[in-house]
Length: 513
Image 1: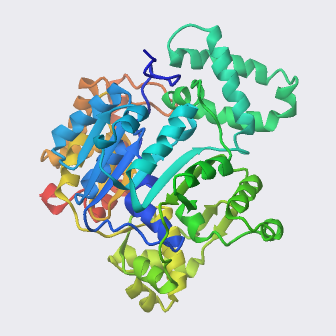
Image 2: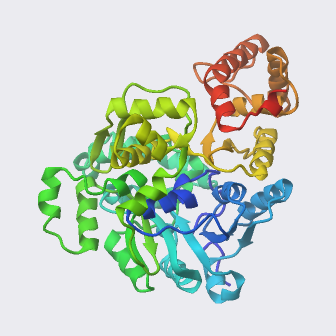
């Protein structure tokens, strides 16, 4: 019998993260930016993530979009058991997880329905060639006409030197004993020594090696294990991936990075000179990858592109939305990073938009008229502000969001505790320090006075063996110092976090009553 992990790391589970780019609303916004008709997510729709890991993104989507049905596939039983427990506790009825391999899904097509969305994040570069083929086959078997596929993966040229590092890590790890994390720690120590040798590869590619190696050392150990200790790992060139997808009737649309999607025609003159000579869309994208040294692609494909949207239909999609400002402070400068560099927003326009939306939620059409700016200016500004988490789009609140948030704060200090909350008023998700979540847990339990919140937090930290760190990153053991640290947290919480939570519906009048 073939090993179930097929060269993939299985002794260490994956990280517990939320990925915003998988959000149906975010994907739809990207499609509209490419003039493609979006999936109707106001009515019932179907969504599948292949290689979902712990399935945290799906969990949040199921609470945010009760009209959708969400399916997660992962071969690791630890992942599926963990997330199924939360689904049961919260009582979500529109989400389903299967502990299956991609081959299982291909061999049993009746297992899954057909989907409006099929996504696989990062996994395409982490599995073997047979499973890459299986991912594409599943799209062929289960994607509806007009449906969309999201496929993200490590790509070249950005991974050219990192590819060598990956081979060093996986080969040198065989010199050591222990589990995957222990091996990673020992290999990193070895690479530190090699880095300082200034010989051969470590001399010629020093700058690129140093940059990537620093990134590895600062990354979550569980992520590093899955990224670098994977025997089947393979960085891919965009044209070879696009060709595979094309063979099963999937047309390339663009990348799932909203700012880059909308501003794709903004190209520096030195690049534009060469790109303008490229006629084929795939080669155009490939050359652009070479210019920006792309290391990770987030590609969107559609199964059959019908009539494209005109600019008025795009205006209608974006500007009919009611927006809300979701930060605590409005900055004086608005600088946005895009693939080809940086973009500076007009301070007068962007600050006025943020000030208005901070005062009251309103549609972007209404706001454009009030501020006397064009629809095009408003659409560009709102896309950049939305993509960079300055604003969210107001939505009808689902009760399951409150129930999921409540479950999270009650369990945040446990092993693998989740640190994200959903903003009920606008279907945004954000990560918070666990101490802030304990404060929210106290509020939910009717504890309102500051001193009682502090006592509740101290007691819960100690009961769960959760240690806070001092300014030098040393564990705080002294009771007075711990009390002082929690007081510092609560001052920041009251000043920077609680006002946002009130605005976006995490904390309601009922909570504070």
